[in-house]
Image (cartoon, one colour):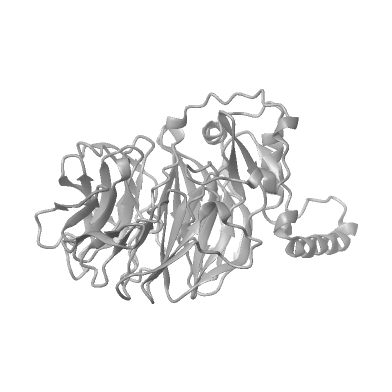
Length: 491
C-alpha cells in the first residue's frame, strides 16, 4: 500500500517524541494497520482453506460493520498520531499519517467537502444539505504536565446538522461556527461535546446574518462574534448581546477567515485584507484596483498571513504570485513564484514559512518576513489545474515538519519531511484523492476533553515513566489554521 523508509519512521515518530517505553505505541500502530483493509486478508500457504478463510473474512467484515462506535477498541499511543481525512468522488477515507495506509473507507453521497471540526480529532463533511460528523480516531487527553494519546478505528457517523448549502466551518476559543450559505444562518457548537453516538449535532446558539450570502462567521467563547455582510462588502462585529459595535464595508468580495496573534481575525478582500484587532477594523490595501486575496493562511505567533493573489477579475489568467500580509507593519507584499498555483496549494511550515506548490511540480519555501525564497523542492511532475473547481488537483497540508501532498493523476499521497527536504513515504490508494485535512489528535486549547472518561481509562492505575520532554515548537498544530475551510468555492 505504501513505501516507508526508516528515515520516514524516525521523522514521523519525532512528531510523537514522548515515546512509550512499555511498547504500547508500537502495538497500537500494528492494530491500526490491521483494521485498514479487511479485504486484504492474511497470506495462507494452504490453498485447501481458501474458501473457509474467505467466508471467515466476510463474517469479520459484517461484524465490523455492525460494531457500535463505543465498542471500538482503544489503544494508548506514545505521542500524537497524525491521520488524514481524504475525500473522493463518492466517499471519504481516513489514512494513517505515518504509513499512509487506509484505516477506514466510507461511502458518501455526491460531491463532498471536508473541514476540520477544531478539536484535533473530528471533522465535518459537507454532504448534500448537512454537515456530517466523522471521527478520525486520534485524540489527546491533558494529564498533569503532559497529554496522553489514544487511537481507535475511524468512524463516519450519521450525526448531522442540517441546513441549506453547508459551507465554512470555523473554530475559535473551543467554539465551532457552522455557516449555511443558502440561508445566511450559522450555528455555534461546543467542540468538547462532539459525539458520533449523539442523535444530532447540538448547537449552543443559532444566529442569522443580515441576509443570504456565501459567508463566514467566528463565535467567541463569550458569545461575541464576527460575521460577513450580506452584500459581501465587508464584515461586522457584535457583542454577546447581539449589538453591533463595529462595521467595515471596505472589503469587497469578502471571503475566508484566519486568526492571528492577540485575538486578530482577518478576512480577504478583492483589494487587500480586512483586519479585526479586537477593538476596531483596519484595512490593509494592496494598492491595486483588483487584487483578490480569497484565502488566508496563518502561522502560530506570526504577524504575517499568507494569501493567494489573483489580479484577473475574470479568473482566466492563472495566479503566479502570492501575498504576504503583515498586520504589524500594515503592509502587503507579493512574491512571484514563476508558475501557476491554486487555492489548495498554500500552507505554512513549522517556523511559519510560506509553502507554495506550483504547477511545475516545485514546492517553494518562502521567508514570510522578507519574501525571500529559501528553497525549492521538486515534488511532483508538471500538472495543469482543471477548469472545474470541484475536479481533483494536487493539494498540500502541513503538520509540523511533515507535509502531505496529493497526486490525483497517480492516485498517490506523498509524505515530505520539510527538515530533510525529501519525500519519505508514498501511499497508493484505489481512489482519486480530492480534498485533504490532517489531524494529529493534539489537545486543543479551549476544548475540554472527557475522552478518557468515555473510554474508561484510569490514569491513577498506570505508570508514566516515559519521556515527555519533546520540543513542542517543532510540531505546533496551528489551531487557528482554517485553510481547509477557506477554500474558494464562489464559482
